[in-house]
Image 1 (cartoon, chains in turn orange, yellow):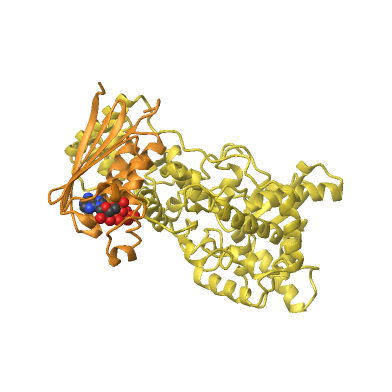
Image 2: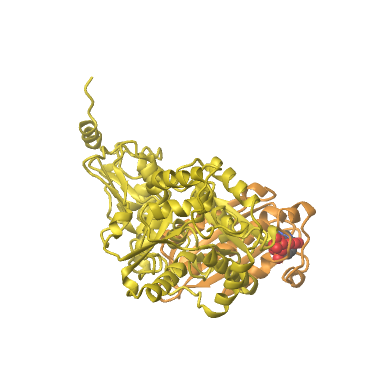
Length: 145
Length: 432
Ligand SMILES: Nc1ncnc2c1ncn2[C@@H]1O[C@H](COP(=O)(O)OP(=O)(O)OP(=O)(O)O)[C@@H](O)[C@H]1O
Ligand SMILES: [Mg+2]
Protein backbone atom coordinates (compact mmCIF):
# COMPACT_ATOMS: atom_id res chain seq x y z
CA UNK A 1 0.00 0.00 0.00
CA UNK A 2 1.34 3.39 -0.95
CA UNK A 3 1.78 5.81 1.92
CA UNK A 4 0.24 9.26 1.56
CA UNK A 5 2.90 11.88 2.27
CA UNK A 6 1.28 15.16 1.35
CA UNK A 7 -1.97 16.42 -0.06
CA UNK A 8 -3.43 19.76 -1.06
CA UNK A 9 -6.61 20.79 -2.78
CA UNK A 10 -7.70 23.79 -4.81
CA UNK A 11 -11.06 25.26 -5.78
CA UNK A 12 -11.53 26.64 -9.25
CA UNK A 13 -14.43 28.56 -10.70
CA UNK A 14 -15.61 27.63 -14.18
CA UNK A 15 -16.12 29.95 -17.12
CA UNK A 16 -13.43 32.33 -15.96
CA UNK A 17 -10.79 32.26 -18.63
CA UNK A 18 -8.43 34.67 -16.89
CA UNK A 19 -7.90 32.31 -13.95
CA UNK A 20 -6.89 29.38 -16.14
CA UNK A 21 -3.38 28.15 -15.37
CA UNK A 22 -3.01 29.44 -11.82
CA UNK A 23 -3.27 26.09 -10.10
CA UNK A 24 -0.83 24.37 -12.40
CA UNK A 25 1.65 27.12 -11.51
CA UNK A 26 1.00 26.64 -7.78
CA UNK A 27 1.49 22.90 -8.02
CA UNK A 28 4.62 23.41 -10.10
CA UNK A 29 6.13 25.57 -7.38
CA UNK A 30 5.20 22.94 -4.78
CA UNK A 31 6.74 20.10 -6.80
CA UNK A 32 9.84 22.21 -7.37
CA UNK A 33 10.21 22.72 -3.63
CA UNK A 34 9.82 18.98 -3.19
CA UNK A 35 12.68 18.64 -5.67
CA UNK A 36 10.78 16.07 -7.71
CA UNK A 37 12.40 14.94 -10.97
CA UNK A 38 11.97 17.78 -13.50
CA UNK A 39 10.49 15.48 -16.14
CA UNK A 40 7.75 14.32 -13.79
CA UNK A 41 7.01 17.91 -12.80
CA UNK A 42 6.56 18.81 -16.40
CA UNK A 43 4.09 15.98 -16.94
CA UNK A 44 2.11 16.91 -13.83
CA UNK A 45 2.00 20.55 -14.89
CA UNK A 46 0.62 19.65 -18.32
CA UNK A 47 -2.04 17.39 -16.76
CA UNK A 48 -3.25 20.07 -14.36
CA UNK A 49 -3.07 22.87 -16.91
CA UNK A 50 -5.13 21.01 -19.51
CA UNK A 51 -7.69 19.94 -16.90
CA UNK A 52 -7.90 23.48 -15.56
CA UNK A 53 -8.49 24.87 -19.02
CA UNK A 54 -11.30 22.39 -19.57
CA UNK A 55 -12.90 23.60 -16.33
CA UNK A 56 -12.68 27.26 -17.28
CA UNK A 57 -13.98 26.49 -20.74
CA UNK A 58 -16.76 23.99 -20.06
CA UNK A 59 -17.64 23.48 -16.39
CA UNK A 60 -19.17 25.47 -13.53
CA UNK A 61 -16.68 24.74 -10.80
CA UNK A 62 -14.25 22.10 -9.70
CA UNK A 63 -12.02 20.81 -6.96
CA UNK A 64 -8.50 19.81 -7.91
CA UNK A 65 -6.81 17.48 -5.47
CA UNK A 66 -3.11 16.90 -5.54
CA UNK A 67 -1.45 14.15 -3.56
CA UNK A 68 2.01 12.80 -3.20
CA UNK A 69 2.59 9.26 -2.01
CA UNK A 70 5.87 7.43 -1.68
CA UNK A 71 5.09 5.88 -5.07
CA UNK A 72 3.36 8.44 -7.22
CA UNK A 73 1.76 11.81 -7.81
CA UNK A 74 -2.02 11.74 -7.90
CA UNK A 75 -4.22 14.41 -9.47
CA UNK A 76 -8.02 14.33 -9.31
CA UNK A 77 -10.16 16.96 -11.04
CA UNK A 78 -13.75 16.71 -9.92
CA UNK A 79 -16.13 19.17 -11.56
CA UNK A 80 -19.75 20.15 -11.48
CA UNK A 81 -20.89 20.94 -14.97
CA UNK A 82 -22.58 19.63 -18.10
CA UNK A 83 -20.66 16.34 -18.20
CA UNK A 84 -19.48 14.68 -21.39
CA UNK A 85 -22.10 12.68 -23.32
CA UNK A 86 -19.68 10.62 -25.42
CA UNK A 87 -16.40 9.93 -23.67
CA UNK A 88 -14.91 7.96 -26.52
CA UNK A 89 -15.42 10.90 -28.84
CA UNK A 90 -14.09 13.39 -26.31
CA UNK A 91 -10.90 11.35 -25.95
CA UNK A 92 -10.19 11.52 -29.69
CA UNK A 93 -7.46 13.90 -30.78
CA UNK A 94 -8.92 16.84 -32.61
CA UNK A 95 -12.48 16.47 -31.37
CA UNK A 96 -13.71 19.67 -29.76
CA UNK A 97 -16.82 21.68 -28.97
CA UNK A 98 -14.82 24.84 -28.28
CA UNK A 99 -16.27 28.18 -29.35
CA UNK A 100 -14.62 30.44 -31.92
CA UNK A 101 -13.55 32.71 -29.11
CA UNK A 102 -11.67 29.85 -27.41
CA UNK A 103 -10.10 28.85 -30.68
CA UNK A 104 -8.89 32.39 -31.24
CA UNK A 105 -6.97 32.12 -27.99
CA UNK A 106 -5.18 29.00 -29.20
CA UNK A 107 -7.45 26.43 -27.53
CA UNK A 108 -10.02 24.08 -28.89
CA UNK A 109 -7.61 21.85 -30.77
CA UNK A 110 -9.10 18.80 -29.12
CA UNK A 111 -5.73 17.94 -27.60
CA UNK A 112 -6.37 18.48 -23.89
CA UNK A 113 -7.75 15.13 -22.79
CA UNK A 114 -5.39 13.12 -25.06
CA UNK A 115 -2.50 15.14 -23.59
CA UNK A 116 -3.61 14.38 -20.05
CA UNK A 117 -3.77 10.69 -20.89
CA UNK A 118 -0.39 10.70 -22.60
CA UNK A 119 1.27 12.31 -19.59
CA UNK A 120 -0.32 9.94 -17.06
CA UNK A 121 0.79 6.46 -16.05
CA UNK A 122 -2.73 5.74 -14.86
CA UNK A 123 -5.66 7.62 -16.36
CA UNK A 124 -9.36 7.49 -15.72
CA UNK A 125 -12.30 9.63 -16.79
CA UNK A 126 -15.93 9.30 -15.69
CA UNK A 127 -18.76 11.61 -16.52
CA UNK A 128 -22.45 11.96 -15.80
CA UNK A 129 -24.39 14.25 -18.10
CA UNK A 130 -25.94 17.11 -16.18
CA UNK A 131 -23.77 16.47 -13.13
CA UNK A 132 -20.11 16.58 -13.91
CA UNK A 133 -16.85 14.91 -14.81
CA UNK A 134 -14.05 13.33 -12.77
CA UNK A 135 -10.59 13.00 -14.31
CA UNK A 136 -7.96 11.02 -12.41
CA UNK A 137 -4.30 10.94 -13.30
CA UNK A 138 -1.39 9.21 -11.58
CA UNK A 139 2.26 9.72 -12.42
CA UNK A 140 4.74 7.19 -11.00
CA UNK A 141 7.79 8.46 -9.18
CA UNK A 142 11.21 7.20 -10.21
CA UNK A 143 14.00 6.05 -7.87
CA UNK A 144 14.88 9.61 -6.89
CA UNK A 145 11.28 10.37 -5.99
CA UNK B 1 40.59 31.71 -13.61
CA UNK B 2 38.61 29.56 -11.17
CA UNK B 3 38.13 32.48 -8.77
CA UNK B 4 35.46 33.87 -11.11
CA UNK B 5 32.82 31.50 -9.82
CA UNK B 6 29.90 33.88 -10.34
CA UNK B 7 31.41 36.67 -12.38
CA UNK B 8 30.00 39.14 -9.90
CA UNK B 9 31.56 39.86 -6.54
CA UNK B 10 30.18 41.69 -3.53
CA UNK B 11 32.68 43.82 -1.67
CA UNK B 12 31.72 43.34 1.99
CA UNK B 13 33.53 46.55 3.01
CA UNK B 14 31.49 48.70 0.63
CA UNK B 15 28.14 46.90 1.05
CA UNK B 16 25.95 48.57 3.68
CA UNK B 17 23.26 45.91 3.71
CA UNK B 18 20.59 48.04 2.03
CA UNK B 19 18.60 45.13 0.45
CA UNK B 20 18.44 46.66 -3.07
CA UNK B 21 20.26 43.74 -4.72
CA UNK B 22 18.24 41.17 -2.81
CA UNK B 23 15.01 42.72 -4.05
CA UNK B 24 16.28 42.90 -7.64
CA UNK B 25 17.43 39.29 -7.91
CA UNK B 26 15.08 37.31 -10.19
CA UNK B 27 16.02 33.92 -8.70
CA UNK B 28 16.01 34.84 -5.00
CA UNK B 29 19.71 34.08 -4.80
CA UNK B 30 20.70 36.89 -2.43
CA UNK B 31 20.50 37.07 1.36
CA UNK B 32 21.57 39.98 3.54
CA UNK B 33 22.93 38.90 6.90
CA UNK B 34 24.78 41.02 9.47
CA UNK B 35 24.58 44.04 7.16
CA UNK B 36 26.21 42.33 4.21
CA UNK B 37 24.78 40.76 1.08
CA UNK B 38 25.86 37.33 -0.08
CA UNK B 39 24.95 35.08 -2.99
CA UNK B 40 23.77 31.47 -3.01
CA UNK B 41 25.97 30.18 -5.80
CA UNK B 42 23.59 27.47 -6.97
CA UNK B 43 20.81 29.98 -7.66
CA UNK B 44 22.80 32.77 -9.30
CA UNK B 45 22.28 33.03 -13.07
CA UNK B 46 24.84 35.79 -13.63
CA UNK B 47 22.24 38.21 -14.95
CA UNK B 48 23.78 41.26 -13.30
CA UNK B 49 20.47 42.65 -11.98
CA UNK B 50 22.17 43.04 -8.57
CA UNK B 51 24.98 45.11 -9.98
CA UNK B 52 22.55 47.46 -11.69
CA UNK B 53 20.48 47.78 -8.52
CA UNK B 54 23.29 48.41 -6.05
CA UNK B 55 23.39 52.12 -5.16
CA UNK B 56 26.77 51.87 -3.45
CA UNK B 57 28.93 50.30 -6.11
CA UNK B 58 29.56 47.36 -3.80
CA UNK B 59 28.95 44.81 -6.52
CA UNK B 60 31.57 44.57 -9.18
CA UNK B 61 31.72 42.55 -12.32
CA UNK B 62 34.84 40.75 -13.20
CA UNK B 63 36.42 42.61 -16.09
CA UNK B 64 39.02 41.46 -18.54
CA UNK B 65 41.25 43.85 -20.45
CA UNK B 66 43.07 43.29 -23.69
CA UNK B 67 46.24 43.67 -21.68
CA UNK B 68 45.34 40.53 -19.70
CA UNK B 69 46.10 38.56 -22.88
CA UNK B 70 49.65 39.88 -23.23
CA UNK B 71 51.16 36.41 -22.71
CA UNK B 72 49.71 35.24 -26.00
CA UNK B 73 51.83 35.72 -29.14
CA UNK B 74 48.88 36.66 -31.34
CA UNK B 75 45.53 38.15 -30.37
CA UNK B 76 42.49 37.89 -32.60
CA UNK B 77 39.22 39.78 -32.06
CA UNK B 78 35.85 38.14 -32.65
CA UNK B 79 33.61 41.22 -32.81
CA UNK B 80 30.01 40.80 -31.70
CA UNK B 81 27.81 42.28 -34.46
CA UNK B 82 26.43 44.60 -31.76
CA UNK B 83 29.74 46.48 -31.93
CA UNK B 84 29.17 47.81 -35.45
CA UNK B 85 25.91 49.48 -34.49
CA UNK B 86 27.51 51.50 -31.70
CA UNK B 87 29.23 54.15 -33.80
CA UNK B 88 28.17 57.44 -35.38
CA UNK B 89 26.73 57.09 -38.89
CA UNK B 90 29.89 58.39 -40.58
CA UNK B 91 31.97 55.51 -39.21
CA UNK B 92 31.86 52.45 -41.46
CA UNK B 93 32.30 48.88 -40.20
CA UNK B 94 35.65 48.52 -41.99
CA UNK B 95 36.86 51.59 -40.11
CA UNK B 96 35.77 49.95 -36.87
CA UNK B 97 37.97 47.01 -37.82
CA UNK B 98 40.79 49.46 -38.30
CA UNK B 99 40.04 50.86 -34.84
CA UNK B 100 40.21 47.40 -33.24
CA UNK B 101 43.62 46.79 -34.79
CA UNK B 102 44.86 50.16 -33.62
CA UNK B 103 43.58 49.34 -30.13
CA UNK B 104 45.93 46.40 -29.95
CA UNK B 105 44.46 43.35 -31.64
CA UNK B 106 46.74 41.58 -34.12
CA UNK B 107 43.85 40.55 -36.33
CA UNK B 108 40.08 40.89 -36.56
CA UNK B 109 38.15 37.77 -37.51
CA UNK B 110 35.56 37.77 -40.28
CA UNK B 111 32.81 36.51 -37.96
CA UNK B 112 30.17 36.74 -40.66
CA UNK B 113 30.96 33.23 -41.88
CA UNK B 114 30.33 31.54 -38.53
CA UNK B 115 27.15 33.55 -37.96
CA UNK B 116 25.97 32.49 -41.42
CA UNK B 117 26.91 28.91 -40.61
CA UNK B 118 24.89 28.93 -37.38
CA UNK B 119 21.91 30.57 -39.11
CA UNK B 120 22.05 27.80 -41.69
CA UNK B 121 22.36 25.05 -39.07
CA UNK B 122 19.60 26.50 -36.89
CA UNK B 123 17.11 26.73 -39.74
CA UNK B 124 17.92 23.12 -40.64
CA UNK B 125 17.60 21.96 -37.04
CA UNK B 126 14.22 23.66 -36.61
CA UNK B 127 12.97 22.00 -39.78
CA UNK B 128 13.94 18.51 -38.64
CA UNK B 129 13.15 18.86 -34.95
CA UNK B 130 10.87 16.16 -33.56
CA UNK B 131 11.22 16.94 -29.87
CA UNK B 132 9.13 19.26 -27.73
CA UNK B 133 8.51 22.66 -29.27
CA UNK B 134 9.55 25.40 -29.34
CA UNK B 135 13.27 25.06 -29.62
CA UNK B 136 14.90 27.75 -27.50
CA UNK B 137 17.88 29.82 -28.61
CA UNK B 138 21.09 29.27 -26.63
CA UNK B 139 22.62 32.64 -27.55
CA UNK B 140 22.01 34.42 -24.25
CA UNK B 141 23.98 32.79 -21.42
CA UNK B 142 21.66 34.19 -18.74
CA UNK B 143 18.74 32.40 -20.39
CA UNK B 144 20.69 29.15 -20.44
CA UNK B 145 21.40 29.52 -16.71
CA UNK B 146 17.79 30.45 -16.04
CA UNK B 147 16.76 27.18 -17.68
CA UNK B 148 19.27 25.24 -15.60
CA UNK B 149 18.08 26.76 -12.34
CA UNK B 150 14.35 27.37 -12.77
CA UNK B 151 13.21 25.41 -15.83
CA UNK B 152 15.39 22.28 -15.93
CA UNK B 153 12.41 20.50 -17.50
CA UNK B 154 12.91 22.58 -20.63
CA UNK B 155 16.65 22.04 -21.12
CA UNK B 156 15.89 19.44 -23.80
CA UNK B 157 14.45 22.26 -25.88
CA UNK B 158 17.67 24.23 -25.91
CA UNK B 159 19.02 24.54 -29.45
CA UNK B 160 21.52 21.66 -29.79
CA UNK B 161 24.03 23.65 -31.80
CA UNK B 162 27.41 25.02 -30.78
CA UNK B 163 27.71 28.78 -30.26
CA UNK B 164 29.05 30.75 -33.24
CA UNK B 165 31.83 32.35 -31.18
CA UNK B 166 33.08 28.89 -30.25
CA UNK B 167 33.42 27.68 -33.83
CA UNK B 168 34.97 31.01 -34.78
CA UNK B 169 37.59 30.52 -32.07
CA UNK B 170 38.25 26.95 -33.16
CA UNK B 171 38.75 28.17 -36.72
CA UNK B 172 40.95 31.07 -35.60
CA UNK B 173 43.32 28.77 -33.73
CA UNK B 174 43.50 26.45 -36.69
CA UNK B 175 44.09 28.98 -39.45
CA UNK B 176 46.47 31.29 -37.63
CA UNK B 177 48.55 28.52 -36.19
CA UNK B 178 48.98 27.18 -39.71
CA UNK B 179 49.64 30.61 -41.18
CA UNK B 180 52.04 31.82 -38.50
CA UNK B 181 53.62 28.53 -37.48
CA UNK B 182 52.56 29.04 -33.86
CA UNK B 183 51.05 26.46 -31.51
CA UNK B 184 47.27 27.02 -31.16
CA UNK B 185 47.55 27.79 -27.46
CA UNK B 186 49.68 30.86 -28.23
CA UNK B 187 46.87 32.35 -30.28
CA UNK B 188 44.20 34.14 -28.29
CA UNK B 189 40.64 34.20 -29.63
CA UNK B 190 38.99 37.12 -27.84
CA UNK B 191 35.31 37.94 -28.05
CA UNK B 192 34.39 41.64 -28.10
CA UNK B 193 31.26 41.41 -25.99
CA UNK B 194 28.17 43.55 -25.36
CA UNK B 195 27.64 42.06 -21.89
CA UNK B 196 29.22 40.69 -18.78
CA UNK B 197 27.20 37.50 -18.97
CA UNK B 198 29.03 36.40 -22.12
CA UNK B 199 32.38 37.10 -20.50
CA UNK B 200 31.37 34.86 -17.64
CA UNK B 201 29.98 32.13 -19.86
CA UNK B 202 33.19 32.07 -21.85
CA UNK B 203 35.26 31.54 -18.72
CA UNK B 204 32.75 29.15 -17.21
CA UNK B 205 30.52 27.56 -19.88
CA UNK B 206 27.12 26.30 -18.71
CA UNK B 207 27.82 22.85 -20.10
CA UNK B 208 31.05 22.56 -18.15
CA UNK B 209 34.51 22.14 -19.62
CA UNK B 210 36.24 24.96 -21.40
CA UNK B 211 35.54 26.22 -24.90
CA UNK B 212 37.91 27.54 -27.54
CA UNK B 213 37.38 31.23 -26.80
CA UNK B 214 40.11 32.49 -24.47
CA UNK B 215 38.21 35.41 -23.01
CA UNK B 216 36.14 38.48 -23.74
CA UNK B 217 36.67 42.21 -23.65
CA UNK B 218 33.71 44.56 -23.23
CA UNK B 219 32.70 46.91 -26.03
CA UNK B 220 32.59 49.77 -23.50
CA UNK B 221 36.18 49.11 -22.48
CA UNK B 222 37.50 49.52 -26.00
CA UNK B 223 35.04 52.05 -27.27
CA UNK B 224 36.93 55.32 -26.89
CA UNK B 225 40.09 54.06 -28.48
CA UNK B 226 38.29 52.31 -31.32
CA UNK B 227 36.08 55.33 -31.96
CA UNK B 228 39.00 57.77 -32.08
CA UNK B 229 40.97 55.60 -34.50
CA UNK B 230 37.95 54.84 -36.66
CA UNK B 231 36.99 58.50 -36.85
CA UNK B 232 40.53 59.43 -37.72
CA UNK B 233 40.39 56.95 -40.58
CA UNK B 234 36.96 58.20 -41.63
CA UNK B 235 38.17 61.80 -41.72
CA UNK B 236 41.23 61.11 -43.78
CA UNK B 237 39.06 59.08 -46.16
CA UNK B 238 41.82 56.52 -46.05
CA UNK B 239 41.06 53.06 -47.37
CA UNK B 240 41.60 51.21 -44.14
CA UNK B 241 41.13 47.57 -44.67
CA UNK B 242 40.69 45.13 -47.48
CA UNK B 243 37.29 43.85 -46.35
CA UNK B 244 34.19 44.84 -44.49
CA UNK B 245 33.16 42.63 -41.59
CA UNK B 246 29.49 43.16 -42.42
CA UNK B 247 28.56 42.41 -45.99
CA UNK B 248 24.97 41.32 -45.59
CA UNK B 249 21.86 42.29 -43.67
CA UNK B 250 21.65 38.72 -42.37
CA UNK B 251 24.83 39.18 -40.34
CA UNK B 252 23.83 42.42 -38.66
CA UNK B 253 20.49 40.92 -37.69
CA UNK B 254 22.44 38.89 -35.18
CA UNK B 255 22.66 42.09 -33.17
CA UNK B 256 18.86 42.32 -33.07
CA UNK B 257 16.46 40.14 -31.08
CA UNK B 258 15.32 38.44 -34.31
CA UNK B 259 18.46 37.20 -36.08
CA UNK B 260 16.56 34.67 -38.19
CA UNK B 261 13.88 37.08 -39.41
CA UNK B 262 13.02 36.21 -42.97
CA UNK B 263 14.53 32.74 -42.68
CA UNK B 264 11.85 30.98 -40.67
CA UNK B 265 8.09 31.47 -40.77
CA UNK B 266 7.24 34.77 -39.14
CA UNK B 267 4.22 33.44 -37.24
CA UNK B 268 6.21 30.48 -35.87
CA UNK B 269 9.13 32.59 -34.66
CA UNK B 270 8.83 34.38 -31.35
CA UNK B 271 11.29 36.82 -29.86
CA UNK B 272 11.10 37.82 -26.20
CA UNK B 273 13.42 40.19 -24.38
CA UNK B 274 13.80 41.16 -20.72
CA UNK B 275 13.98 38.58 -17.94
CA UNK B 276 10.50 39.18 -16.48
CA UNK B 277 8.86 38.63 -19.88
CA UNK B 278 11.04 35.62 -20.64
CA UNK B 279 9.96 34.08 -17.33
CA UNK B 280 6.30 34.61 -18.22
CA UNK B 281 6.75 32.97 -21.59
CA UNK B 282 8.67 30.04 -20.07
CA UNK B 283 5.80 29.51 -17.64
CA UNK B 284 3.42 29.39 -20.59
CA UNK B 285 5.61 26.92 -22.46
CA UNK B 286 5.76 24.69 -19.44
CA UNK B 287 1.99 24.48 -19.22
CA UNK B 288 1.70 23.85 -22.92
CA UNK B 289 -0.02 27.19 -23.36
CA UNK B 290 2.34 28.47 -26.05
CA UNK B 291 1.27 26.70 -29.19
CA UNK B 292 2.32 26.83 -32.82
CA UNK B 293 5.77 28.30 -32.18
CA UNK B 294 8.83 26.53 -33.62
CA UNK B 295 11.60 28.73 -32.36
CA UNK B 296 11.90 31.05 -29.42
CA UNK B 297 14.53 33.72 -29.33
CA UNK B 298 15.07 35.10 -25.83
CA UNK B 299 17.44 37.63 -24.38
CA UNK B 300 17.75 38.56 -20.73
CA UNK B 301 18.34 42.22 -21.54
CA UNK B 302 15.28 44.18 -22.40
CA UNK B 303 15.55 45.19 -26.06
CA UNK B 304 18.19 42.54 -26.77
CA UNK B 305 21.97 42.48 -26.84
CA UNK B 306 22.28 46.12 -27.88
CA UNK B 307 21.19 46.77 -24.30
CA UNK B 308 23.98 44.64 -22.80
CA UNK B 309 25.69 46.18 -19.78
CA UNK B 310 28.93 46.67 -21.73
CA UNK B 311 27.49 48.64 -24.62
CA UNK B 312 27.67 52.42 -24.85
CA UNK B 313 24.60 53.62 -26.73
CA UNK B 314 21.11 53.61 -25.36
CA UNK B 315 19.07 50.76 -26.74
CA UNK B 316 16.86 52.89 -29.01
CA UNK B 317 19.72 54.75 -30.64
CA UNK B 318 21.61 51.50 -31.18
CA UNK B 319 18.54 49.87 -32.76
CA UNK B 320 18.07 52.84 -35.11
CA UNK B 321 21.70 52.73 -36.17
CA UNK B 322 21.53 49.01 -36.81
CA UNK B 323 18.34 49.42 -38.83
CA UNK B 324 20.13 52.03 -40.87
CA UNK B 325 23.15 49.83 -41.52
CA UNK B 326 20.93 46.84 -42.35
CA UNK B 327 18.88 48.77 -44.90
CA UNK B 328 22.02 49.60 -46.89
CA UNK B 329 23.09 45.98 -47.25
CA UNK B 330 22.06 43.13 -49.53
CA UNK B 331 20.24 40.25 -47.80
CA UNK B 332 22.94 37.69 -48.64
CA UNK B 333 26.58 37.96 -49.46
CA UNK B 334 27.25 35.46 -52.26
CA UNK B 335 30.91 34.82 -51.57
CA UNK B 336 30.25 34.33 -47.89
CA UNK B 337 27.27 32.10 -48.55
CA UNK B 338 29.40 29.76 -50.69
CA UNK B 339 31.91 29.48 -47.86
CA UNK B 340 29.07 28.82 -45.41
CA UNK B 341 27.81 25.97 -47.60
CA UNK B 342 31.27 24.49 -47.93
CA UNK B 343 31.87 24.53 -44.19
CA UNK B 344 28.35 23.39 -43.37
CA UNK B 345 28.97 20.13 -45.18
CA UNK B 346 32.28 19.59 -43.40
CA UNK B 347 31.95 20.77 -39.83
CA UNK B 348 30.52 19.17 -36.74
CA UNK B 349 28.30 21.74 -35.05
CA UNK B 350 27.00 19.67 -32.16
CA UNK B 351 28.02 21.08 -28.77
CA UNK B 352 30.60 19.12 -26.80
CA UNK B 353 28.58 19.42 -23.61
CA UNK B 354 24.95 19.92 -22.80
CA UNK B 355 23.93 22.19 -19.91
CA UNK B 356 22.65 20.03 -17.05
CA UNK B 357 20.08 20.96 -14.42
CA UNK B 358 21.66 22.63 -11.40
CA UNK B 359 21.84 20.20 -8.48
CA UNK B 360 18.93 20.32 -6.02
CA UNK B 361 19.27 23.04 -3.46
CA UNK B 362 18.67 21.03 -0.30
CA UNK B 363 18.54 17.39 -1.35
CA UNK B 364 17.71 14.49 0.93
CA UNK B 365 15.30 11.60 0.37
CA UNK B 366 11.63 12.11 -0.49
CA UNK B 367 10.39 11.92 3.12
CA UNK B 368 12.98 14.45 4.22
CA UNK B 369 11.98 16.81 1.42
CA UNK B 370 8.29 16.45 2.25
CA UNK B 371 9.06 17.20 5.90
CA UNK B 372 10.87 20.35 4.85
CA UNK B 373 8.03 21.56 2.64
CA UNK B 374 5.50 20.93 5.42
CA UNK B 375 7.71 22.66 7.99
CA UNK B 376 8.10 25.62 5.66
CA UNK B 377 4.33 25.88 5.24
CA UNK B 378 3.86 25.77 9.03
CA UNK B 379 6.56 28.38 9.61
CA UNK B 380 5.16 30.57 6.88
CA UNK B 381 1.90 30.85 8.83
CA UNK B 382 3.74 32.49 11.70
CA UNK B 383 5.32 35.14 9.43
CA UNK B 384 3.56 38.44 8.68
CA UNK B 385 3.52 38.12 4.88
CA UNK B 386 4.66 41.68 4.31
CA UNK B 387 7.85 40.66 2.50
CA UNK B 388 9.69 43.55 4.16
CA UNK B 389 13.02 41.84 3.68
CA UNK B 390 14.40 42.97 7.03
CA UNK B 391 15.14 39.35 7.94
CA UNK B 392 17.63 39.32 5.07
CA UNK B 393 15.56 37.07 2.80
CA UNK B 394 13.58 38.49 -0.13
CA UNK B 395 10.17 37.30 1.07
CA UNK B 396 8.39 35.55 3.92
CA UNK B 397 8.08 32.48 1.68
CA UNK B 398 11.81 32.35 1.16
CA UNK B 399 12.56 32.89 4.85
CA UNK B 400 10.21 30.04 5.75
CA UNK B 401 12.03 27.75 3.31
CA UNK B 402 15.38 28.90 4.60
CA UNK B 403 14.36 28.10 8.16
CA UNK B 404 13.00 24.68 7.17
CA UNK B 405 16.26 24.03 5.34
CA UNK B 406 18.32 25.19 8.32
CA UNK B 407 19.59 28.24 6.52
CA UNK B 408 17.78 30.79 8.63
CA UNK B 409 16.12 31.23 12.00
CA UNK B 410 12.67 32.32 13.11
CA UNK B 411 14.40 35.04 15.12
CA UNK B 412 15.55 36.67 11.85
CA UNK B 413 12.01 38.04 11.52
CA UNK B 414 11.61 41.48 13.09
CA UNK B 415 7.97 40.71 13.95
CA UNK B 416 9.00 37.71 15.97
CA UNK B 417 12.22 38.93 17.49
CA UNK B 418 12.58 42.40 19.04
CA UNK B 419 16.28 41.64 19.26
CA UNK B 420 16.47 41.53 15.50
CA UNK B 421 15.13 45.06 15.19
CA UNK B 422 17.67 46.21 17.80
CA UNK B 423 20.41 44.61 15.78
CA UNK B 424 19.25 46.39 12.61
CA UNK B 425 18.95 49.69 14.46
CA UNK B 426 22.51 49.29 15.55
CA UNK B 427 23.74 48.34 12.09
CA UNK B 428 21.95 51.12 10.25
CA UNK B 429 22.22 53.83 12.85
CA UNK B 430 22.31 57.37 11.41
CA UNK B 431 23.46 60.53 13.21
CA UNK B 432 20.67 63.11 13.56
N1 LIG C 1 -14.75 19.05 -17.83
C1 LIG C 1 -15.48 18.98 -18.95
N2 LIG C 1 -16.81 19.18 -18.91
C2 LIG C 1 -17.55 19.12 -20.04
N3 LIG C 1 -17.04 18.86 -21.27
C3 LIG C 1 -15.72 18.65 -21.38
C4 LIG C 1 -14.86 18.71 -20.24
N4 LIG C 1 -13.59 18.45 -20.65
C5 LIG C 1 -13.66 18.23 -21.97
N5 LIG C 1 -14.93 18.36 -22.42
C6 LIG C 1 -15.40 18.15 -23.80
O1 LIG C 1 -14.46 17.33 -24.47
C7 LIG C 1 -13.96 17.97 -25.64
C8 LIG C 1 -12.50 17.59 -25.84
O2 LIG C 1 -11.71 18.10 -24.77
P1 LIG C 1 -10.15 18.34 -24.98
O3 LIG C 1 -9.61 18.94 -23.76
O4 LIG C 1 -9.54 17.07 -25.45
O5 LIG C 1 -10.11 19.34 -26.19
P2 LIG C 1 -10.54 20.88 -26.22
O6 LIG C 1 -10.66 21.40 -24.83
O7 LIG C 1 -11.74 20.99 -27.07
O8 LIG C 1 -9.31 21.55 -26.96
P3 LIG C 1 -7.85 21.81 -26.33
O9 LIG C 1 -7.78 21.03 -25.06
O10 LIG C 1 -6.91 21.31 -27.37
O11 LIG C 1 -7.78 23.27 -26.11
C9 LIG C 1 -14.19 19.42 -25.38
O12 LIG C 1 -14.31 20.17 -26.57
C10 LIG C 1 -15.50 19.42 -24.60
O13 LIG C 1 -16.60 19.27 -25.45
MG1 LIG D 1 -9.10 21.09 -23.42
